[in-house]
Image (cartoon, rainbow, N blue to C red; front, side, top):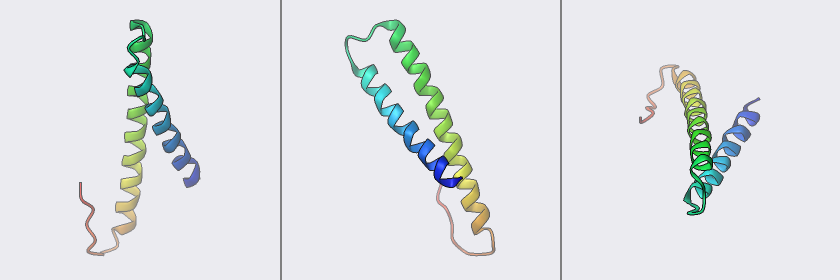
Length: 72
C-alpha cells in the first residue's frame, strides 16, 4: 500500500511538471491556462496532504521516547 502512495505522489509531481510546462507556453489560451492552473492547484493540495500524512506517520513511529527531532 505504501508503494502505491509513493507512486501516486511521484505521478502527481510529474503531472505538475507537465502543467508548469503548459502554463509557460506563450501560445496557451486563457481558458486552457485557467483549467491547467486549477488542475495544478488540486495536485498541489493532494501532494501536501500526502506529505502531511507521511510526516504524521514518521512522528508516530518516532514517538517512542527517542530523541530524534523532525525539523519543520
